[in-house]
Image 1 (spheres, helix red, strand yellow):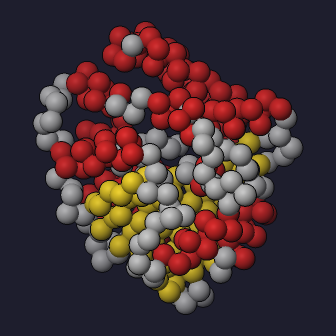
Image 2 (cartoon, one colour):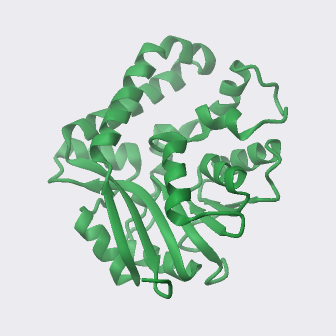
Length: 281
């Protein structure tokens, strides 16, 4: 079974991650100047609903300064920095794409958070972190790239301490996919396998997780991606002035396709909380 599919760089969201430096310059920040986490929030949260979603994870998982958290698929580091800055916990941020990881690390240095956030470029299925090290796992819109859910959730279970918790936000299948859905998922989101909610829960249970709680985010995410699409299209000329026409066209196409599949309704979103055995039931 394919674990990471090789076309992840076909995702237009990931083709030009250095665009954040152009965004910062346009916002008045000099190259290399110190930053605050709040300065980056408009640009470094690749997932849906921004820091609202991260705050939900902090609350559900009970993250505080005593916890050690691992983020799987950390992108350019937005959630990891936000969690560390807000709670003073330690975060290990795992990102398989080296260019995104390098940007994440550079921005974390500029935010003076390197003592709390450790960035590692690795395939999570091959990551050799010590077993039973982490109090919590967080992941936003990353598991959809990994089709081998058995290996993935067994890895997650192994990384957690007894009673450790996991928070996931991810795509799910709401109903039968049509050919356009399948093409967009594979070509534009690097997703070759999309489970239904029941299948997602089954995979977690089989890996040894319990207290599995699922929130259907489909309607909320559909509204978000449509709003993002409309806002981008209204401001596309300014975006092109900052990033160039090619990048603007690619991002516009990506946002339009995400709005399309969520509006059609065969693809949805889930927020999942679960716990490894050993905690209070």
